[in-house]
Length: 338
Ligand code: SAM
Ligand code: DTB
Ligand code: SF4
Picture (tube, rainbow, N blue to C red):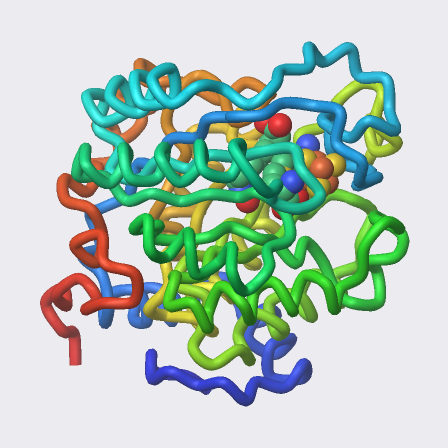
């Protein structure tokens, strides 16, 4: 089925067959794949900051920052560079090696605001951290400018399957997302792209999302699997909770399909028990968002996470992954198993 060799030609039937394996076999295979590319006791700490908050023109039904819904969120214009870098510095001191700046834009702006974001990127890199940004759609020129400023990765999620996408967002298309991802890749920036579960999508939609990601060549270097954070005022405020075992199966499937990528246990950890999170790590998840806030919603925070990692005998990575280089060498292999 897969021994951790990189493949880009997965069929949906193959993806389904992996996801449906007996859980013991599924986790075992995910572990084999994981250990070919990563140290199994290490998890990357990645910190998030919303650098521009709310009033977004897009209508993503999951998102508290969409201007289409009344979520009571305090809007905020683009932060200044110093404020951003002081948050990055604090995050670094608390163990994060990656800093992701998120903005509630449909597309990255032009002019002074974009220049300010470039300065933020340079500043984060100067701190010795990986710099990630998620600013909406990009032009080729913007992608090249971000690459020139040293941006390590660009986050742009496909969110779900092409078939379900129109149920979630009507103000842009799946193809728009793929086009921006292609621009990011062409500019030599590493790709962070994943999705959300818990929006009313079917199992097939979830697996098709993974297939979309895993048939890109190269694979996205980073794959965040968010569990929907249900926010009052959004159309998905009352969506049904996600079955934790289904979520774990998805993590393991992502790990097997894209063995060399960071699979991120991302938004939604407050809905998971410590045991649920432990299962996600067993399934091959190897990153968490650190700190008490995601972009606009709460996250477990340092004290809880330190206790959890200690209980599990896991440690945060202490070096930027890839040495912070866009698409450089992968982290040295953990002890090969076979
Ligand atoms: N506006 C840019 C965009 O959409 O690409 C960047 C910021 S946007 C908040 C980044 C990602 O956060 C979205 O693609 C979505 O996958 C995720 N996200 C937003 N709201 C979420 C929620 N309530 N629960 C889980 N993930 C969420
Ligand atoms: C991603 O996939 N998850 C992060 C990051 N990329 C930017 C964002 C999660 C946002 C959760 C809702 C919020 O806090 O606003
Ligand atoms: Fe805007 Fe991004 Fe939220 Fe969609 S997910 S409403 S594009 S901030």
